[in-house]
Length: 209
Image 1 (cartoon, rainbow, N blue to C red):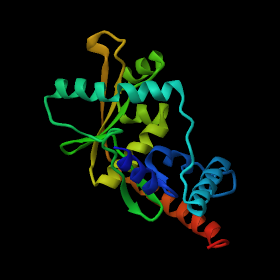
Image 2: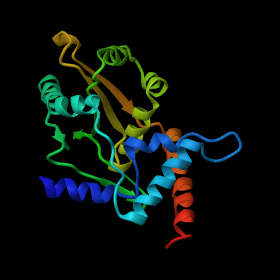
Image 3: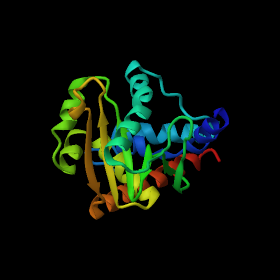
Image 4: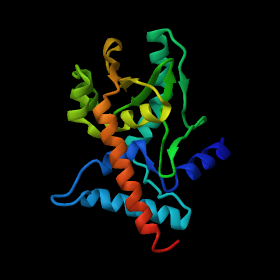
């Protein structure tokens, strides 16, 4: 298992990942990228130059989410009665589309990508339960929306499910499944932003390599 995780981390090094692609989606007032986007691109350049992925501090909320993800998959599988290929910590998979872009979906269910969130804060799950359309997800949690769009493009799927799971709720409210269909204009916009960020990354690295 440790070998697979290390290989997964190595593949992520220097790449704009689906889970963080939202950071490059915003522009500055008169510039292509916001300061957040610029800082993220520089961090990716540093990963290339050091050949080490940036460490992400583990929070209690992250530990909660990770520890309940497999439980969420089991609950979902029982609900939909379909086989799910889960890419968890024991089976990490990294899809690469280009030199500086890749991502790891939580799993695949037939023609669907699945993205699972297990909020530590139960009020977040309540917000998710209230989603009716993918626009609700895009407005409330754009980081999750763009993550899903990226993973759909990487896996060449046109459908996804955003899954929110909280075992503390009554059984009928424990899971939310929101279908996401690939929006062609959003897909085009994301690819354009990744291309621009990749050029910026190359420009920075040209000073050193």
